[in-house]
Length: 351
Ligand code: DAH
Image (cartoon, rainbow, N blue to C red; front, side, top):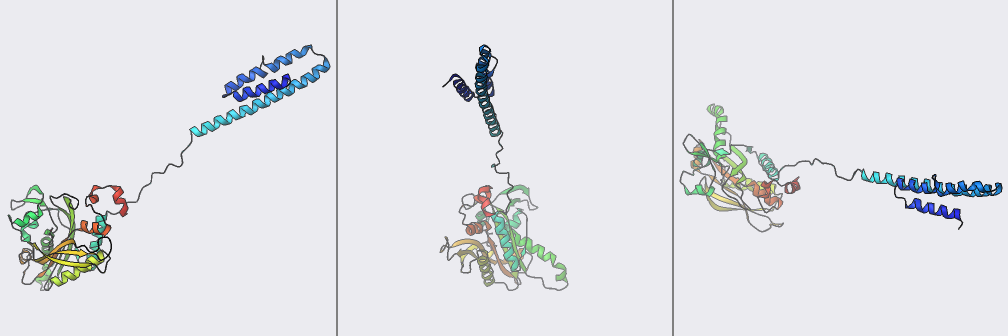
């Protein structure tokens, strides 16, 4: 390799080794700068003869051009690298998911409530609402459950610091049954004018869904829970009607025509006779087991009297069921508390 070729070669190596534009400019100075090697060679040409000058000058020029070309390439490469680094540093991560507004949905128990209302409305039942802070008389006494009666302990409840006219503390209603008497009073008042004019009062047919409270807390009991009361009173409404209505309701609610129902004798102060209603699925994970879903019975004459009606003329049935329980059965949920924890990971599944 002649001298010029080796200079070009070492220039290329020096440029390649330069990691920054500043390094590169320093390297350049060693070759084509004022005291650079090529510049030195040019200066040394003064002593040469004319012909030699020509060939030597042309050769040096070629070497210089080669060095400048290598320099330009390296400059470009360094500039490209810098741009790439900058782009990378300022990169916008377009893969980050946006802040989505998830559509809300009805709570599973609200879905059940709506379903219950829809089914009973289609059977001609009115839907009524009532207070959750209730008087002692409405929650217990009017329902044939007098003070100090042991049946009151079936519904151990919360009391509030407000006393009624009777001097007895109000309670957070332990069941929706007070709505039986409340609704009957409203119904009688509503039809009072027509009754005075001699018209017969229409039958009472109502459901009353809502929140209820008891001193209870475990996997299947929550201090706040839901109930739905039902009442049908007329001049000839019997247990047979209760069976038809409730069977129809359960089969529609669970969309199962072969659902079996069992009326198991029980006790409630406000009904006589009384029965617990159990259901049995014929297929699915719960098939074959009897599951309690409601209390029911023929409305006790004392309760009919407290409604302001004559028990000789008015007869019928009532029931009280647990929409939370129905929701658990419908969706296969085994812990009631999940409904009231408010965890969206659970609730989202019902959207
Ligand atoms: N109130 C009762 C309870 O909470 C349920 C009940 C039973 C309601 C029988 C009724 C009925 O209307 O007839 O345990």
